Amino acid sequence: MDQQVASRLEADLFLLHAPSVYDFRERDDMLFAYLSDSDSVNVTSVYEIYPIGWFSIKQRLADHGFDTKIINVASLMLMHPGLDVKRLLGRLEAPIFGFDLHWMAHCHGSVELAAALKEVHPEAITIFGGISATYYAEQLIQYPSVDVVFQGYDTLEPVTELVSRVRRGDRDFRSIPNLLYKVDGEVQATGFTHKPKTDYNNVRNDWSYYRETPDAGPSGSKLIMTLPNTGCAHDCGWCGGSRFAYRNIMGVQKTLVQKDHDLVVEELRTMEEAAKRTSIYALQCYSENKTRMHQYLDAVKELGYKSVHFEQFNLTPPDILKKMGESTESHIMLSPESHDLKISAAAGRGNYTMKQMEEWIPQARDAGVKSVMIWFFIGMPYQDRQSVMDTIAYSERLIRKFGGWAALPLICPMVPFLDPGSQFFEEPERHGYRIYHRTLEEHRRAMVEPLWYRRLNYETRWLNRRQLQDVSYEAITRLVEIKGEYGVLPAGFCKAVLETIEETRELLGEMERALLLDKALPAGLRDDLRDYNRKILAYSTDQIMPVPRPFGGRWFDDATVPQQMIEELLTS
Image (cartoon, rainbow, N blue to C red; front, top):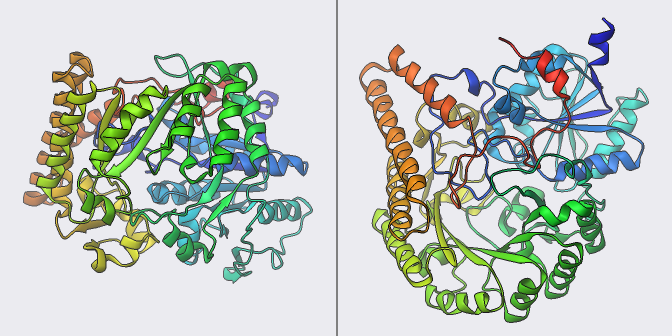
């Protein structure tokens, strides 16, 4: 008994991150289809990365004397396929458990994980937050597993007040803003009024836990992210964090709120000596002004960070390019979405031509920027199959002209969902879209559709859902072939990627034929799907260097549950 008690974890608040599909390990009726992978962060289609804002909640509560523990259940399930999740939940002791519904990809898993938690701890309070939770707050609160929904882009004060009250034994939440909650089964609303215009996210995120974890991946380096602001000044029509979406979801006019720069620098300092073997993914730095960017780069240089990947909306001006080149090994990520200026502009970009970009790339390289990564998107207005393949032809031109890594083209489809709250979701006909899933429950059901094109909540006037799936594989296949032909990627990598894409397409075809003819998947095919899913979800990858990477060592991999406890919770 003493051993059992010793292996429990206690906290004032546990933050639990769910997989995209709660029971993904048991599924033999759907395909977690390989996409090579359609992200620049090495995650799987289980979407095991959690919102970086959780660090802020943890730090704010720590500043008020409360203990918050983050447990990445999705990561643990991937790393330990035999982990008994309900037994794990039974080892956690807290009055409150929080779940993120920031991205819609988690709409199935988060609600189901909360339901499992309720079975184990029926008296505990379950709370939800995030952009998607805010958008669907009135629907989300109706689920039996959901007790409280926090609305807003900065919920530090409301969360702190709720934890304080619960710890005092007080469950009267009437004066806490931004809440939907239940009293005897009846939903109560406190008003969505907490919308800070300044002092956004005003705590220092602490990366110290990550300093001593094993380095991730074949490069032997760590990767952290920085997020100096929320919202956006731009209006990409597909994005749930755009200016339009923030006005729509958050009910604000000022859609870009910046974090105090000194807090960002203090956050960078928490890696200490480990900074020298750490890379940074600089999120949303395209919204930073020149002064803040220069200060950020000065800090990166002073602290000795290994490299930084900068998201940039425009072609970075010469003075900042020079500063990037001097500060560290710098990489720039551009997202024109299409080589076609008409499509790029319709998507919310279109602020430079490909000719201008090609003239700018040598300037960036001369300034010391190590590489430029150019992301193209599938699922944009006016974009048909020929346009997508023309983008691939243009990608070959870039590789031929710049040798590959100096200007590396990448392409991915918009999956699984068009963001609710975005322009294209709210005004689909105006922009050439058709929306298939509107409600939260429709999206939850879509997440477990056998075929991934049927999970999509949209199609366009130019590409229906099935065509979006087909052209995605066609485009990615051809781009991988091109990279192999020009020696950008090793032949072995390319061969493995192409074989996996071919296997994926064959399985999707078999599934579609079986569902069409028999309305069901035969036992033999289910066995194949189970084997395929286990293989695909046994590692992570990304499009930049598509080498299978073992789990562990990523900043979002679980660092809370002791190994001894994990071993006790493994089933044979």
